[in-house]
Image 1 (spheres, helix red, strand yellow):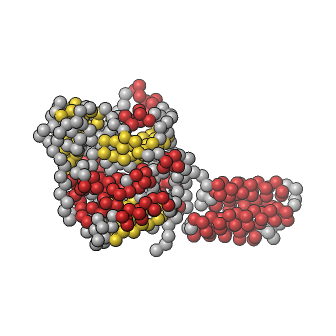
Image 2 (spheres, rainbow, N blue to C red; image 1 turned 60 degrees about the horizontal axis):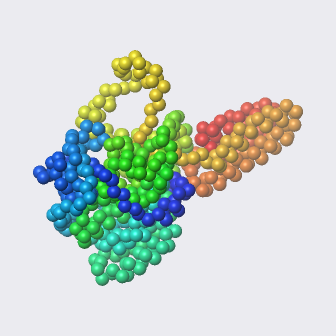
Image 3 (cartoon, helix red, strand yellow; image 1 turned 30 degrees about the vertical axis):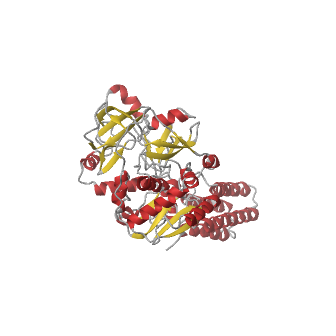
Length: 521
């Protein structure tokens, strides 16, 4: 199987700063929880304690993260989620007594996670012998994984032992970044110290990886858990505390970048108000990373225990253009698919990493289109899919006259990941510059009749372009089409040397430059 070219969508400007900041406790004045069913004791103005069950969502209990009183219970009509009830809890200072949380530790790991209030792994698990701990920060603007390994090393190891025993695995792989020498030392130290407590049937291995997106071990069918999930597993089994808190990195265009521990149900707007915005206009609020996360509304969205980061990025509109056939999306796909020509095989194996959309020079949102195709395939019987089929391009919609000018100038923006795009390559700029100067130089020299000098300059420039393209092929493992185009360029430059017509030289050089332009070099 061929290797893929990993993507490095990172802004290292604030990474060292975020990694050096310890977790701080953020306590909001109120939280909001969403439930499909409510407990019989949950009514307006009823007292609620931290860790108390509020209701259920898809057979998972929802726990309160603070002590307080139920301020309001309403039906969720915001369209933010499919959950039915919206429970607002106001914080109170005094501690309220409640029944202690006692989880049921069984061999079924999915049942254990549901009792904690967490989502079990999605899809069919094919590799059931290995549990992977996802410690590599594959998303930019995030440092919660490093801080959790640095501050809660013991809880991560013991939580991995608990989940490994539940799922019946034979090996636990603790995945960290190669430059984390201090984390590697801490893991080795505590693995030796707590060896007598850990399950003897499970082997533990520390794996170091280079930071890239996606991480090399992120494959479908594997048991992969974030460090936050392992800490919740430890708290539930050893300390009898359910998953009622979240570990979040707040970064991007905010004045106060930091790592926070906050109750589940904290409003995104409250976090942004506490941290402050650098730019008050044209900002997008993204949960769980700019490559795979989703944009949310600060008024309606809340933090859940599974969330890992909150990033504020600029709202950018990128105009799509037709596919140029560069096959860059296929070169970066970790599943070795062909995103430029998706089929049923692509829909089944796509992991929605967003790398294809990130590197696409035509700004085509490939991963979003594939995701919509998968949703349409699964939900073709639902009304939402039927409604989408009814509205086609050019459909007449009645609107008020005063909104006509506004609709004509409106730009449609996508909220789907990725929320950043690959910057222009310096090598590509150099090659384009050479291709632009090549025909101009041929025309200028031909005006003075120095045909031999013109042909020589064309040959030298062609050789330079071939050399630059060859370097790029070695580094990025691009497709064979680019190599064929570069060879045609060199052959054409050599063949036109005996031709005595400088105009023909310039025309051929210009045509070849256009051919390479099609390949977006």
